[in-house]
Amino acid sequence: MPLKHDGDLRTISGWTKNYRNSVPEGTTLGYFFGRSVIEAILEQPGCEGIRIYNAIDSDGVRQVVLTGVNEEGNDIYQGILAERPTRNPPYYVTPNPLNS
Image (cartoon, rainbow, N blue to C red; front, side):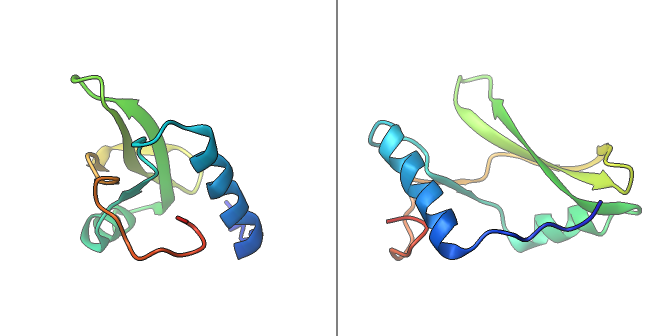
């Protein structure tokens, strides 16, 4: 799968602003996964990237799930999966073009 990096900060910060303006206050605006789990996913044999799935947990809370993807674009679903990231809010970061 070819890498695609075509976004610039102005465009992407506009997209995140559009999202913030379209959801009720208190809605999750972002998710954080630590480096160790991302590296563990990417270090799996044959892993070429990461896919992010939207999910809803058993308590009805929206989540995201990360899985590795091989060179054919297939999920490595029997490998390492990441779930339950740190959510923003309630945790905030210093204001920047992506979040304010």
